Length: 169
Image (cartoon, rainbow, N blue to C red):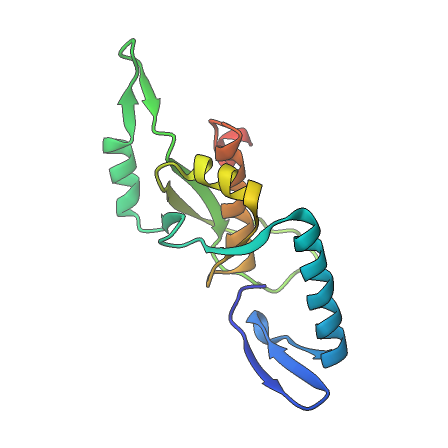
């Protein structure tokens, strides 16, 4: 879920409302059990937990149509043999134009909205090295779909994949 949450607690349980209006309840004893298990797992792995914000920290993303002109104009570089190649730090992804649309019996392709993602310099190196010492978690105020797609873009960047998802289809 997106990380929009509010909480209220009573003496025996806590209630959290997450994005989409879903409210979950968890007992204090279950919360303590989860925390204890999590602490034990981190101690045995000799790691700490590190939460990283996606937007404006690890990357910048926009659906602004002006970004397409910028990408076309300045994100194609010349390689050593004067051939055009794409910048590796600018990726694209397509998200549904509207999340949570009503499902129909007939599958209708949802219109997509192209987003341009500019990865921070040295992101792959940072995440690879941080992963050795920390259990990494990403946070975003965006939607779950956005989080999954951006995590996929970052994962592909770390392993050196050169094509974006829409180029593979």
